[in-house]
Structure formats: C-alpha cells, structure tokens
Image 1 (cartoon, rainbow, N blue to C red):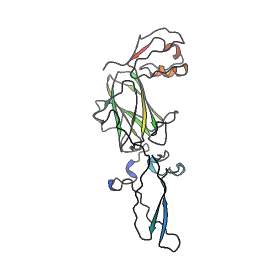
Image 2 (tube, rainbow, N blue to C red):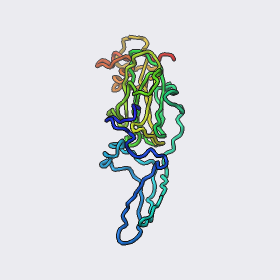
Image 3 (spheres, rainbow, N blue to C red):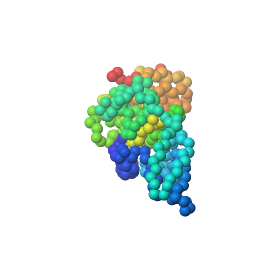
Image 4 (cartoon, rainbow, N blue to C red):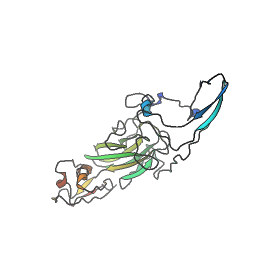
Length: 291
C-alpha cells in the first residue's frame, strides 16, 4: 500500500525467493538417517507456525496465517544421498469467486458501492482493491475493513488489511496521503480503521490490501464507509428519544442509544460531542452529493 518497505523501514522482499519456479517449495535438505541404515521413513504434515516461534519469520510475525483446508499425514521413504520430491495437495481449501467489481487497478478503480458496505477478497499476490467516490471539502469520513476467513467469520489469522486514500487525480507512485500504518488498529477484533479529513471538493481513490502484500482465496474482508456530504435541514431541534433517518450511501444506520455518538461522528463535518444524543438526531436526513 505504501511502498516496498514495512513499518520499520525494512524491505518486504528480504525473505524467500522471487523465483516463480520455486514458488510454494520447501527444501528439507540435510535430513539425518537414524541408525546405521541407508534409508528411513519420514512423515510430512502441514500446520501453521506456532506463534511463540513466529517472531523471526519476517512479515508473518506476530500474526500467523492459518492454512486453508487440511491434508492427512504423508509418509515418504528417503535414502541417504537421495533426492525426493513430494507434492502436497490441500483438501477442502478455499476457492475465491471473482469479486463483482473486478478487474480493477490504481488507474481504473471501481465506483464505491452505493450502500457504503460490501464483501470482497484479496486473492493473488499484491492484489489491491481500488474504489473511487466524490467528496466535499472540510468533510470527515471513516473506513472500516474487517478481515474474514473463508467461512465469513472475523479473523486475525488470515489477511492483515490496510487502507490508503489518494485524490483520484494523483498519478500514483507515492505513498498514500492518508493511510493506516498497520493492520488491526482498533479494539474491534480483526478490524482496521482509517479516519480521514477531505481537504478539497474532488474525486478520491480508496485502496485496500494486505499489509504483507500477500493474497489468497481465503483472504476475505467486509468493508464499511461512513461519510455524508450534507445534512437536511442544517439545524433542527429534536427530542432525545427520536430515531435518526439516514439516506445512503455512506452512512450505516445504527439503532440504539449506545451507538448514537458514533452516528454523530459518521455524519460528514459533524464532530462528536457529549451532547450528541440531542444535537444530531430526530428528523435529520444525510445525503451524498450527487455524482
């Protein structure tokens, strides 16, 4: 999302190999043959690395990626001085259906979904989903991305979603002016959130990708954008218990008093306050500026 280096300035490509011929290959050279015999049987299994040992495995520490699917143990016979190749097929692994908005890239983003909420996935190395939307000067917005596993459940053992925003006129090749430096920066399990201020009336680009630059069929996510161009009427006295009326896109309707301060913050240009229950509800309609 923000260049070839991680948050500490280390390049992502310092691990493994970029040779496509050895992609997904593990070299177990130098296995010892027990006893005085010339051959032995070895059992191969597939599992995620223990998190206690994962801190030194580059961008995969501390959050390990759980395997997709499973495989029964495989027993192979190896001989001293020999060379054996064994393919391992994962059973029941995820299959990623094409996202409804693909293909997209930095120069050809998809329109932001009208309802401001959607499901998608990051499948394929370096895959980034790009969207565009219209915004007004002096507005605020929040983008929430929750990582999901292949069954649609929130997870911190699959993708590490990060978010970036640019003006649509930005030619690219530089870091996003507004971005999350790392994934899971909220108290909500599996969620990354970007809060941004729009400094011009223009079209904007939104990007979502994996922090490691990775991508797999089980790297699913749910995204929500909270944004409103204007409120109608601009001011209105209201009773404390009136329910808000929202006009989408960009605003997710939240019911109940416990969410009302969040609703207030979700309106573009309206700041959260301790009097949010009375100041921001009852007969207000939030609208996006017509594109």
